[in-house]
Image 1 (cartoon, rainbow, N blue to C red):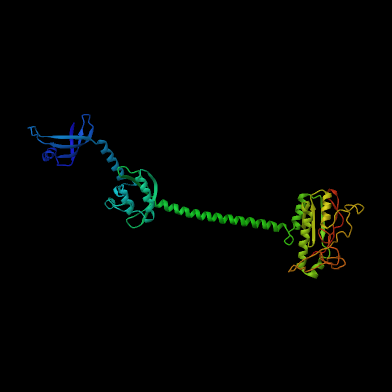
Image 2 (image 1 turned 120 degrees about the vertical axis):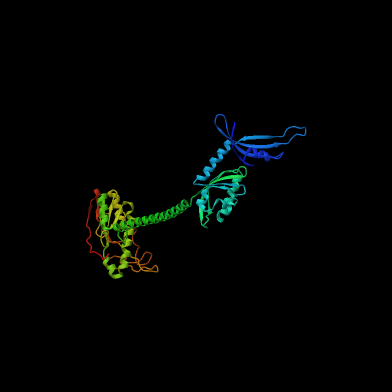
Length: 409
């Protein structure tokens, strides 16, 4: 095996080094040797000088060599990785002090290797992150790997940079660290979080606006189809619904002498009468038909039930049941049957503002409220003056439709 070169402890040449050896001393050096097959080996050699024996033996030297070719190759690879890596590589001791750092540390944080080697890692960690990082470092010292840890490290200019790093489990009181600057990533995440918060707020606002628009739409549809005073269908909507449902019968109700109520007690009392008439009509009709206000004091009902049930519901609307045996023929309505009693309640303190035609509206005699003296209580059902057309099977109506003057309502 041919010796090519020697480096290490001791003098420059082999002979000089051996000459300097005192008896019992040794020197270590690294030698390159070429094997007969041409391969070059790196040998770590320990040279010792043997003392002359007292028996007259000759003095000599002892050479012990160890092949470290693979170790040196690994070290060269590591050095190249340290030198050219864009990530920050470091070796730290068990106490958290830098033992070696790559040039990327200076490029990223501005600290030179001389300023960092021997310095504690915690000297560079943000105070708010220090407790959490120490806890994670203790896990590394216990033999656990750490992945994607985040923290802030101080830059040489005094600013703070966000860093993500992995740390290997400690072996031989050392741990390898691979760190990367993620400041821009964290800033982008924060901006994205703010943007998402704005989007969420906008989404909530849009949802609220959509709900409000739905409410306004429903309200507009309701107002377009219903009478604002009584809540019954208005004229247009009632006629449209009647055309769609093809009713079995139609009844029209008119409040006689309604103008006298307005003239005597005022329009607020007339409004109360109209609302009460509409309420009682809807209660009497129920599911049998649909009530609409088609004029000032004129209401109409189209029925969707068989004619017999429609006749019963129509009679309920004016406070009458079906004629008893021996009475008038079912389906025939006498001229005075529709002229019933109307009671309008208005004003405050729970007192009636008007007993408007509580008796016979044609005579103009006021009647008594239920429970008061002066006459029997009104019949059960709608206490309103109305003219009820006779109802016959097949959906047609017969009888007289009253012609009443238009009311201011």
